[in-house]
Image 1: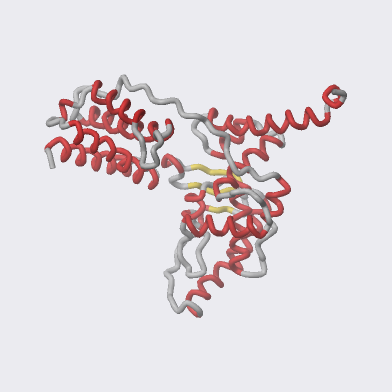
Image 2: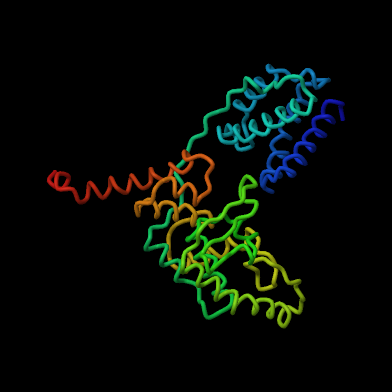
Length: 321
């Protein structure tokens, strides 16, 4: 392994530790080193011998390389993917300049590709959402757990990872609010939850959660350690991402909804439904905890399309055509 490659790998590991200390999410801590591997491979392929040879021209050539890159399926990589590989690179060199390993930032003149802002997919209509929420059998421990999870997801717009890491003491059903600790971007927040969601969380905690631990001991013959996680599996363990996707998919299928719906779609649907009901855009931004209101504005396009459709359907001048 050449000296330049060794140094780059050491610096990437240093950046990862720094980001971990700054409270970045697990996903970011995983994605950044993976995306930076492509730059390391590129540097190895062009035969640079010293890190001081990484100039602005090298960075621009790397960007051009990404733009012309053809994947295994014979297609160019998307602008979104290019953006995802260049952003960690820019972060790395800014970090190295601050730490004194580089005198200047070779990515300073880098112009980032413009990402296409796609409209969120998998938006449930209100009647579909209500149908979905009515699917779990609340007379069973797992059904009551699932009911509480679905109601909380729709009520608060909580992200999948946040839901799976949520602790019992972070949810206040009396005051109908919950604390999100170390959410996306390492941010903490307090957000409201609805009365119905709070009701089913209370019932789940009193009735279902103890039975899930009991099931683990008596049926699965294991002794799971008591934990503070709000939602657990029937084995008393943390719900993983695959579990949550399966749970949502199961009830979507049971409700006979012909849409591809993921846990994140519950968040999208909540935002659209609030805007349709007249909620202020800033309020929805706070609920979703978007750092920029431009991200939240994507949902207004869906709401506006609904208004246009209703306008064409019901306005007298449109009907007279």
